[in-house]
Amino acid sequence: MPDIHSRRPSPEEVRSRTREILAAHAHLEGPLLPILHAMQESFGFVPQDCVQPIAEGLNIGRAEVHGVITFYHDFREAPAGRHVVKICRAEACQAQGGNALADDTLARLGLEWHGTTANGAVTIEPVYCLGLCACGPAAMVDGKVMGRVDAARMDAILAEAGA
Image (tube, rainbow, N blue to C red; front, side, top):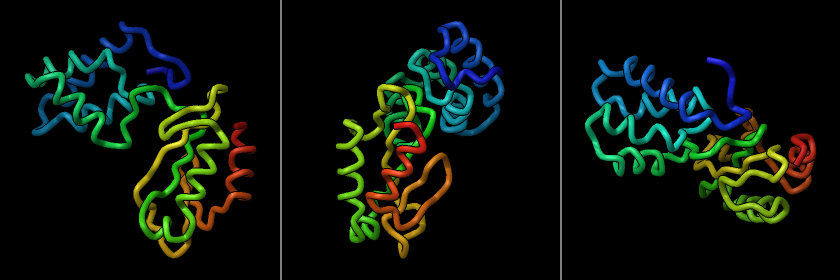
């Protein structure tokens, strides 16, 4: 499958890939999560166009599929920016200035959580513990974990990402 993470897939691309993924996971017990992970891996998000076919394929309601997508923070309903910055929201990071870091970052970018900058450079997401509790506040940038992220370091991260 070609890399289409930088654009929205056509409805036909979604239908075709959904059929492939359903067929590949039909043998699993409790296949919904693996199917949703495969959809996100294919497209960079879980397209709305796949919800009905997944529900029909698994003989469950659309609401159940939608509920799982919205319950788990790692599933996206829209394409992410070229860079994903996750800021830890857990208590240890909060105690070390994580709330201020998050608030300042969101305000600087003019975004809410899960938002993407207008130029498509950065998506900001919350994460609930990166395991760097002694080095908070922590962030993850494109899968790389960073500790002791202060306002100056976040400014550098965002500037490098093109935000």
